[in-house]
Image (cartoon, rainbow, N blue to C red; front, top):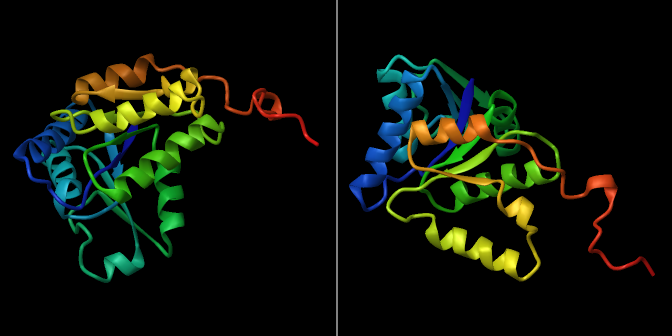
Length: 197
């Protein structure tokens, strides 16, 4: 089993972010679970990879050539796959992962998280998607999702598919218990859409 980890290329202000990334990497390795991630040696990306490797785990990095050439690639990975584009990178990560988890991060982490979560809603894949909660970091985002749900932009059964984990053991328990929901466009039509003119 492998988990795709989305994480910031920065470490953040609080030392708890790096500690949580380290704990996740070590915990996944100890459970015999590999990691697929963006391939960098910096920030939380590097912390989760280093911890997994130090505990004997498998870490596959996937990085576009343009970033490898800027010398931010982690050179000690189990495997480093080099792609030509960011789109190829994300597709390669998704193909090698059985589940996805986002650690604290910035715009890139959010973009990766929302893409794979949307893919799940559209039945492009049937894999669990989670965030790793660290000191309330994801609380504003989860509140925004609840607001979207309350206002009819996100169906409650789809809102509930975003898992919230608090460590490696919690993540793996959530992943094991997860069951895919019916896709957003079951039958090919949105039942709440207005009739065509």
